[in-house]
Amino acid sequence: MNHCDPISGACLLSGPDQPADTPAPRRRAGLAVHYIGDPMCSWCWGISPVVHQVAAFCEAQGIEFSITAGGLRAGGGDPWDAHFKRFLGNEWKHIAQVTGQPFGFSLLAAAHFDYDTEPACRAVAVVKSLLTRHGLAALTVLSFFSAVQRKFYVEGEDPKLVDFYMDICAGVSLDFAEFRALFESPEARQLVQQEFARCRQWGVRSFPTLLFERDGLRAPLAVGAVSTEQVLARLNQALGA
Image (tube, rainbow, N blue to C red; front, side, top):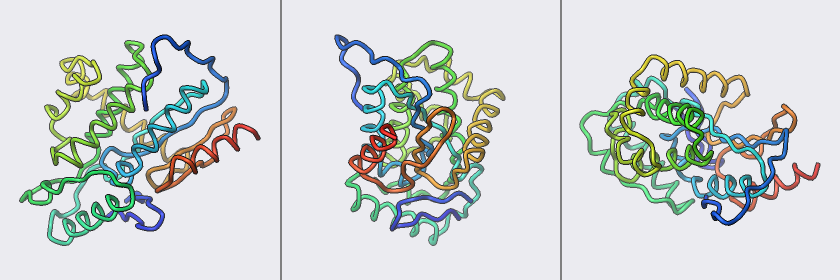
């Protein structure tokens, strides 16, 4: 079973749109912020507002912002028993108290559930592919990621089912038929494995993690629970280095 540290807010492995009349900032070459998380990682949902603020800051400053889906429980397999459900319930209550994020608990009443995060991560990889294919706004991926989190954590729906994503695609102006075809394809399974491999190549072993990159060199900005003020202070310090 994966462990989520209630102190650090890290789960270990097994923003506003820019106004239309504001010119896009010039991209600052060599700079990037990478968010590595999982749509079914509870602390990732906990700091979702922080991530949106960081993404908005990057957009305003011309810094690339990217999401990598790390695969917290890819493959699932945890027994859906009283012990696991009690662990999840206590964890969600704690995160709600710390962050103020809403949680629903209806999922915990389900007789059976496979906590496999691969399909949710695969959905994120699919949207990233569609973004490249159609030239969509970069923050579309974050909007999709957050909508998946809310539908799972608040509404208790199952991200392993492809129809789970129908209204989410509509909400970010993606064609659901195109999404569905790619989501169910071998290509998508390969794409998400590439996401997992990138996470491990970067040495990321817990979620959520934010990395700052300058000229190909990456360093941690934050791991686990963190405030917007803390991240932006560290980011501004890194930018001034």
